[in-house]
Length: 590
Image (cartoon, rainbow, N blue to C red; front, side, top):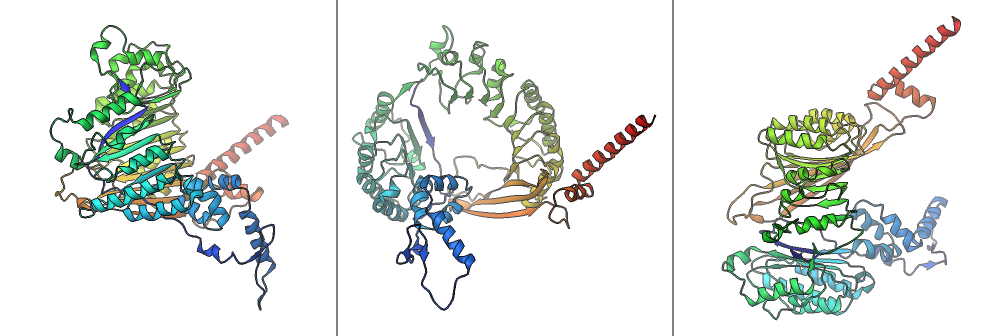
């Protein structure tokens, strides 16, 4: 099939339940008062003298901060890259104007998300004035308000703001633009300005509702795009029920896609291709062409022997065609697809290190045994991502036993058990200790009320001290809700709660503290929006009454007397060493 590099058509049913945070233009008022201060060439600030004298420590700290703020921009960017959260990054940018000018543009404004029309006008107006920041914007996502009485006004204001900043040629680095609303943009001039004044724009996404663009729309005049996405809003299905293949606008759209930037995937040849991932597209769309010999996609795979990562969906290719693949053609190290496709790639079992099942696996006995038998043949597997749809709460124990017996060398495990309640977290923490090499863990389970996030994380960390980080997510049994949603159906609140944990080890590699970040998202009935709550805290994993551990002989003695698994191992080691010493003494004395 002829496909662009990244083409997808997405049916969007309801976006009101989606909530994203937007970064408002930061202000640095606290630095404006320093403009009038006298500065030395090294950046230090002379404060006015008064009845109070600054201590030597305060002066040294002020000099250190001033010198740090005058550091080169590349050094500041390297420091900011180690910050995990955007809030910490924002606070760092607000410490000084030098920080803001050096860090804010390349990091905070790399992707700009605007959720309302007022944000579009204010933020884009600020970027139009601050071209030094606007030149760092690489992705712009516009989602105006979708209230029924303000749709047209919000769309008009947002599209005008985008057209003005694009026409000013401030967004010279823009590569991705997304318009996500119930209707397409009100002003056609927005597409014209983006096409003419943003030379690096290669990825375009837009929504379509009841109104379909005419054939003269500027949206259909883009060329050389690398990705194009359409989000079909509910209004599209309500007002476009007939066959629209003869509509002039539809013909213009397909002409743009297939004549100006389509690439024949199966005819392409890239000698050094290492990774290929396909979405829900059909490769073998012409069944007549595959009856004479090998499927064109199989020929394409055989022509790329250096391919190491392959991602497929059940719509790409029939697993029967994969059986015709030359056994020596590919040696994959990472695969993402269905169970049937994996069974057809048996020649890559010995080299596979990473495996992802894109579709959930039903927890029937036969299916679990089939998955287990396939996983047992993947001797080099170190990373597994699998999701099970449970028939009963009792299926989870057999699933974990099967994974433990089939994949003893796992280092990364992403496990999801949905539809039914599954593991008791306290017993799960103990069962996971059988994965001796596990370092990163991700669990998604149906909501249970036996333990809180803090208690569950503490038990998992103490029972699995080899872990470096893990995540835990709770979802409702019906998550996500079946589509499409009926607008008047009062479905209950949909809640997803998750927590990410980072284990802080001590000098001996044992868990000492646990950094926790909890996030809870609640979607309200009738699509009235969503609320998101984030908490951060640190848990002490040391035994109760423990003090700061010493080093040297006192530290070894402390572990020897410690009431923990490490203390038991240390005492056993010392006892064994004493027995060896006594045996050696008896041998020497005869």
